[in-house]
Length: 234
Image 1 (tube, rainbow, N blue to C red):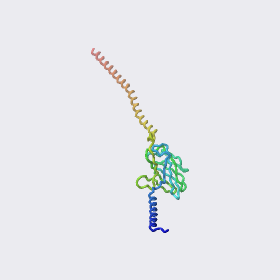
Image 2: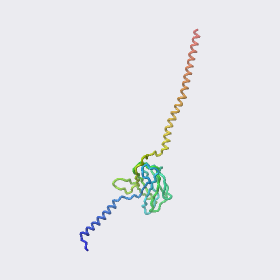
Image 3: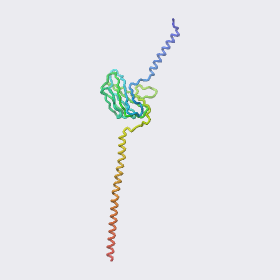
Image 4: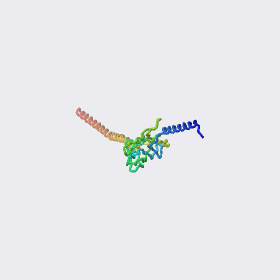
């Protein structure tokens, strides 16, 4: 059975459109994240939260040696403690975050580790800019921020947070230190005031006694002068 030429042309057009559509969808698909973060309690103001970070290996010739993370606002480097990491890797805090580093991993092996955070800030999402260092010196920078019409090519890991639980409040990062400072600040003026009051109470009677003595002495001198004057007159 022969196929009509018009049918053949329609089939070719259909196949061409399908291929073009497939290519378009592939190009429009968002870039996959090669550095990711998850939390066991992804909720604002949650306490003692474990964060899991995964960096996918992309080099064909070298393995990971270090991961550098810049913490978002509301998280202090001192509030982060290492829970689990590749063998021999250690966490070292920096001014704006921390570095997890150690012996080079095998080529093609992903780097994953876990840290525990004392308390998450009150936010809708947290962005963890990450720099990945390979044993050959190559550095992959997953630091681009989300948002906008164009999907970032190297997006930073983003943790979406649910709203805080009812009753959860933001706490002073160092409540004990702040309290001690407040007590010390209040104690110093109080001490000065007490000393001043003590000086006033002890000085008053002394001044009064001196004045009284002078009055008595003055009266005696006046009486003695009049007596001598009267005796001379007589």
